[in-house]
Image (tube, rainbow, N blue to C red; front, side, top):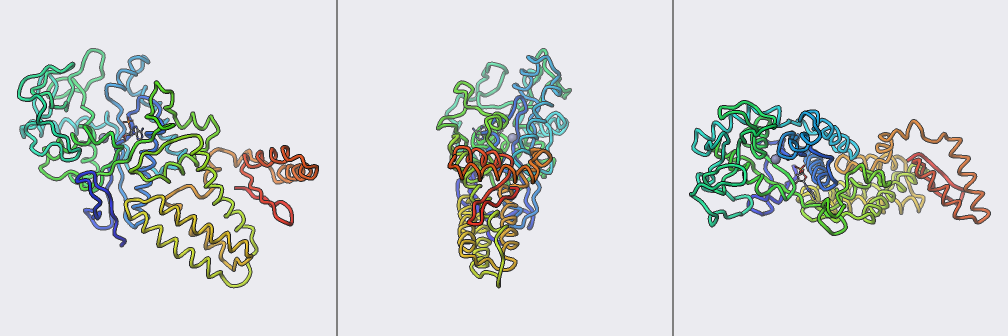
Length: 474
Ligand code: AMP
Ligand code: ZN
């Protein structure tokens, strides 16, 4: 099997990835807090995790992925109260919206989507273990993690808390802690908050605790990969390590992989700047989810990605180049023996593609391998040198790389939006094409372009050839 290398945030080096159990990989990915619709920054992270999952599977590993749903925290509670709804009724809307977004972006489903509210007993059990081992203490019905007891705290983020105030009782704005650095494992409930019974009275779990308890439940005390956006490194993932390793005495996770943030128009997304788009808002502006997926997967996960309307349009154009090649190849006449150029192009793609993925998920290199094949095939089509079976072989090679990218089959994207049912009949397409020809003849190019755009918006691909226009459904 190909050697796989990842940049491990723990240690900050590129290192060879060795799964705990040969042939399999276990991945935990921090999921959405379901108090509102996901913004496209969140979606970049989820698409990255999908890309990781698909790449590992392409490279021959059997993947088990868990993504939690944070359906109880300060924000979900506050917002559900403001909306006058029970917590579950409130979050249901956003859980549904989250899965709709994943489907629109062709994100493969993880094996498990555990919800925090359904795993409170597991979290209580882990907190009890931490208290028994001297890492947790109770204060006014809440439970805190005692940072002073954890000698290697800070390994992931490199944070040094030693110069912070310690050893004296500090009243934070909400709870009484022994030490300002300590973080909450269990929060005593306040008036009007949903709560669960616990040995320390009614309350609810802290956010970090849910990921420790749920990852261990589904993946065991130690597992291969844990992901999230870079903002999760501190304090969330640092605290997960502290809790998990203090509770079990075992290493928690082998490889930590964090994806960089999405920016919009060069700025951090924020409500104030009005640049915090949801996928649905982009779709309303006529942007195709397929182009969004392509834009997000084409950038390296460790680089900030700047979303602009131009960049997503360019992503659409790049996809069109592949669509056009598919179309031309589909209607090219095959004669003679298979092209040796095409055979070599496919072989090269296979090699370069897997190598690029295995090298810390180098998406741009993997894509340049795809576009190299597209160029080679276009040349053979122009030379009218497409041989028998070449079309099928190229389509199979594209389908193979699409197991990872999930963007190169236009029909897979059209089936989603219901356009298959209400698309134009063949006769309607022929009529529109005839109108377009007539417009061209009278040199009314504005009109002929308009018709072409209309056909394209219905998923009809047109190619002008010396024998006249040819078309097919994309
Ligand atoms: P949340 O719903 O706030 O818990 O976030 C869900 C995921 O989105 C987390 O893994 C975050 O790291 C990630 N995230 C938040 N903001 C951005 C952003 N601007 N770009 C990329 N990922 C983000
Ligand atoms: Zn988490």
